[in-house]
Length: 178
Image (cartoon, rainbow, N blue to C red):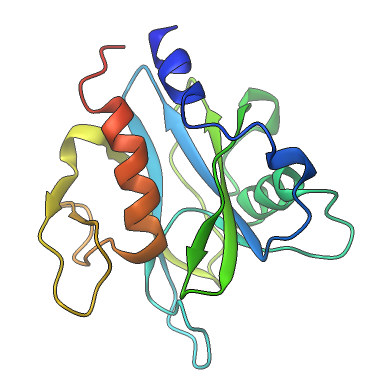
């Protein structure tokens, strides 16, 4: 219960009325196992986020009523092994800017299970459940943004929008006891 109350502190209550956004991501967290989903995007020419570490998510499409619908649609398109009936939506976080122009809204979801992950092979190189305590904040290289993390599960630095969102989430959850 304490975890949910802490996570509610990250929620921006205006998320459902914001129409001006480019994309949305899903921060999927299991409070019992203290793990969240991170993925490595496939390398694609012309994709500015090619090969980056990320949360499941993507661009707004016509028909998405708001950023919640974008985040949930993208989550289920990218991660095939989650049961939609077992995902609890907590809410949308504040709007983050990526590359100084793209408005991205992260949404927090809770799950009680951490099934083996199956993902969209066209978009995602690899997806993993990563423990909050496995993530280590590091000094960012000069060309990266303010918050950077590493984990033994991936060989890449987690930076940019994902690093900033992860930093905000970890600052709330790091000392949490399930």
